[in-house]
Image 1 (cartoon, rainbow, N blue to C red):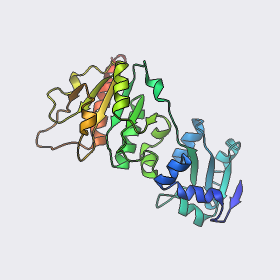
Image 2 (image 1 turned 90 degrees about the vertical axis):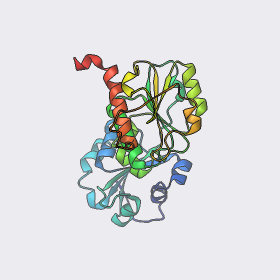
Image 3 (image 1 turned 60 degrees about the vertical axis):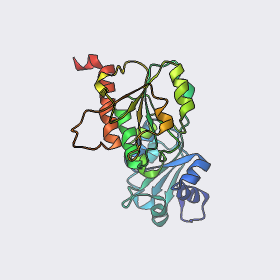
Image 4 (image 1 turned 45 degrees about the vertical axis):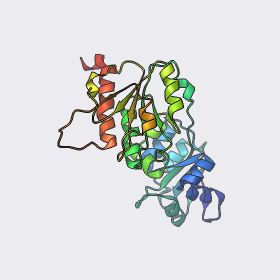
Amino acid sequence: MKKITSRDNQHIKQAISLKSRKYRMREQMFLLEGKTMVSEALQGKHPLARVLVDEAHREEYQDLYEQYSGLEWLEIDSRLFKAIADTETPQGIIAVAPIPTPDFTCLMGQNASLILLDQIADPGNLGTIIRTAWALDIDGILLSDGCTDPFSPKAVRASMGGILNVPVYTSAGEMEIELLKTQGYQVIGSALDASNTIFANDYQKPTVIVIGSEARGISPKIKDCCTSFSRIPINPAVDSLNAAVACAIIIMEVWKQRNSELLC
C-alpha cells in the first residue's frame, strides 16, 4: 500500500475536489466514504478507481486490502485524509469510483417500476429514496434537471449502498417521459388533491411514479406529462408528507402488488 503525505499529490487533489459537484461532473467520479459503503462496492464488484485508507486505520483495513489487492490502495496521512472526508468522525476509508451511466434504452419494452423525482432539493431525502427504492426492488430512478446531485457525499451516505445498486438516470424531462409512454408506461403523479388514492392504481403495468419537490410539488411541465394522479390518504389536518416518506409509502404498495404471491 503506497503511502502519500503530500497535499500536492494528484490523487489527493482529485479526491478533495470531488467534494464539489463541479469537479464530480468534470471528472465523472465520486466518493464512497465509510466501511459499509466501500465494503458494499468491493463485494458487489462495482468498479473503483482506488481506495484511500487513513494511516491511523491501516491495520483495521489490512484484511480488506489483502482480499482486494488487485485495486490501487493508498495509505494517506491523517491530516490529508480529514481534508478529503466529509464526515466529522471519519471511519478511515474512502473509495474513488466512476459515476455510473446506465443506458436509458434498457427501459424500453420492459415491465419496469420507476420513480421520477422532480426538483427534489434535499440530498438526505434523495439518498433515503434511493435506499428505499433498492429495498423495494424499484428498477430505476429518474431525476429532473432541478434535483440535487445524487452523487454528493450526503446523498451517497443516505443511500447506504443504494446508489451502487439502483440505476439513476439524471436530466430526465418531458422527452424521456413521452418516450416511456410510447413504450406503454403509465405515468402517475402524486398530488394532494387527486380524487384517486394510490391504492386504486394497477402497478403491475409498466409504471413511472412521479414525486414532486418538498416545497412546490410537481412542476407544470412534468405534470402535463402525467397520465393520472393519485394521493396518499392522510389525516386532513396534516398538510403534506416528507418526500422520502411519501415515496416509501407509494412504492411499498407497488412492491405489494408485484409480489402478492409472497404475502400469502
